[in-house]
Length: 175
Image 1 (cartoon, helix red, strand yellow):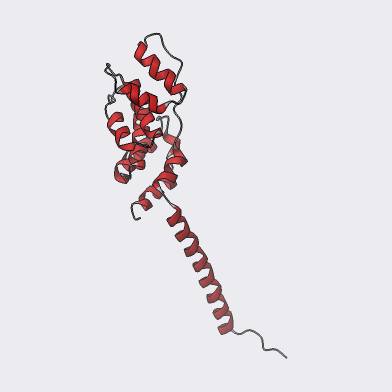
Image 2 (cartoon, rainbow, N blue to C red):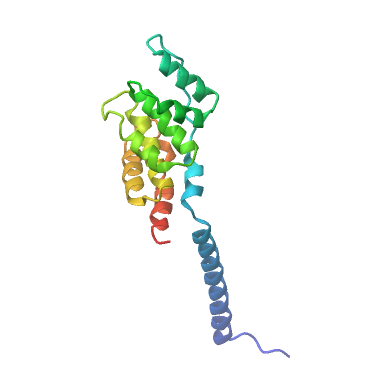
């Protein structure tokens, strides 16, 4: 005849089960931490900018850049940007995005920062600048801008930055 389980046996098995659960959670969290990368987070929230329909006030130079952008000829846009011209905020935005698309976040940051703070493309520039900072591993700068966007319910990119996403960036700072 077998002896019934006593309190000690129940506690011992219970502790063993808790220990296994803690170990499994630790392994999962470690795996998630090791898989976390700025590039992965960037890809998670990057949205390709869609040009609005062209207005009649576009210059010939702007039309060239817009056409190249629609064709996703990002290197050609960067080459075109080096030619002398009077740039406007829309041009800076498209050039900055082209730098992001060609994996040059340093020049993307410099370009987005030239967009006027009160201009028509301020919110788009803020979003893509935050992504450029992320891609450039400037987590504090990225986090600050992303938090501003998240806190502004009227920002068109507000929903791209959840609290969970921002916590992942904070975690990246530990790597």
